[in-house]
Length: 53
Image 1: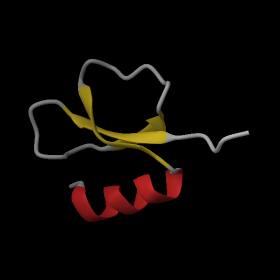
Image 2: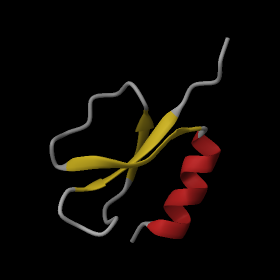
Image 3: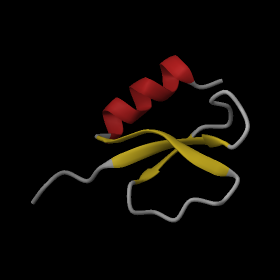
Image 4: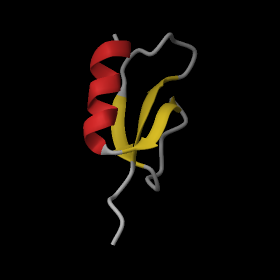
C-alpha cells in the first residue's frame, strides 16, 4: 500500500499565510489554495516551516 500523500494549502490572496496540511484527497475550503504537494506529511511539514508565515 502506498504512503498517504498530503498537500500544503495557504489562504487565497496571500503570500503563503495561514497554511494548513491536509490529505491530498481532502476537500479544501474556498478560502485556501494548494501551494505545495502532494508529498509525504513530513516533507509538507518541512516546506510549511520554511515557507509559510
